[in-house]
Image (tube, rainbow, N blue to C red; front, side):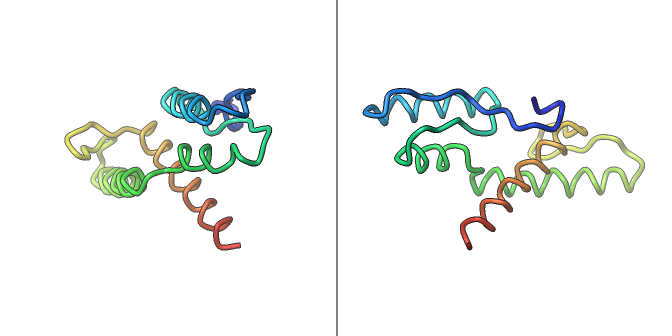
Length: 111
């Protein structure tokens, strides 16, 4: 889905009376790279939002990745190192996605 510009959403958790199951499914989906989860009840919104929202650490690391990569490109390099890890274009694209999601969440939260 993401390769075609669409969000990848995990399927529905049908058990409305087991919040631990919903959270486990959300965590697993987030670890697998899904952007969110399809929800069928208002009480599922908070846990899903909490689990799929970028953490402050992810936001800060994303900013570092973009900055380091931009500086590397200015020096004629195609890669950079952030926190001891190699950073390439695919990491920059993921960092931009994280920052965009974080920005969208802040806008929605302010409304």
